[in-house]
Amino acid sequence: MKQTTLNFGGATVKPIKQKIDPIVLDIPKDSTNPDYSKIYEDVEHFKACLEPSWREALKDEFTKPYLPQLLQKIKSRPNQVFPPKEDVLNAFKYCPINSVKVVIIGQDPYKNQGEAHGLSFSVRKGVNVPPSLKNIYKEIKRTYQNDFIIPKHGYLENWARQGVLLLNATLTLDEGMSRSHEKYGWSNFTSAALAALNKNVQHVVYLAWGNDAAKLTSHIDRERNLVLVGGHPSPLNRTNPFSGCDHFRKANKYLVENERTPINWNAINE
Image (tube, rainbow, N blue to C red):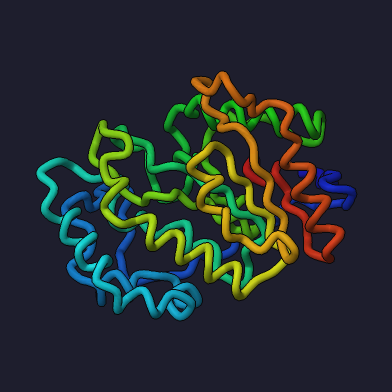
């Protein structure tokens, strides 16, 4: 197959030639039989399943009372919880802390069976592309024209493997019930993750779409990082349009200016 080069953020980027093997954690992966039973047995189990660099960065969180309370609340839910427990920490799994270049913050997982898999805005291949992600694709296409091909799927793993942390503010929910775990304490954990990133890594671009995401980035050091705030890509957002935000070009421009490799947004087509 003929190799092409793409221009992202003023730098020439070659498409990814091979996949990087994911970090293997303690939860077995079986996509044909996902484990929806319970989340984690206890804090030690949760800790063991977190990617090692994040485990170290977030070690103080494991001694705080909110975390066992959070896990117990989820375990006691009578409804099915999404995503499957082997996918809950995928955002961290694919992005060790020092590799993070861009953070895309979502609200909470998709609420329907088979959709959520631990990466904000992403769905696995074979699942219909959600409306918000369609609008994200349209914005990248508007920005990069022929250098971006809108895929027929919504699987964003190849963004994550390049250092895009696809993090939801809340990592779980009940089937069919948006925001159902919003007050369980996940925001304590995800806020701590962003604080650890802010402390340990500089020249990171934070894409904060919507009010919830903007609140999570309020304490990010703007002198060492770039925070881009804009409207949510949901088609229900009619007050602060997402289209035309130019965040993807601005993100790569900032990365290049700070001697970091830009994101090949088209890599999800490989």
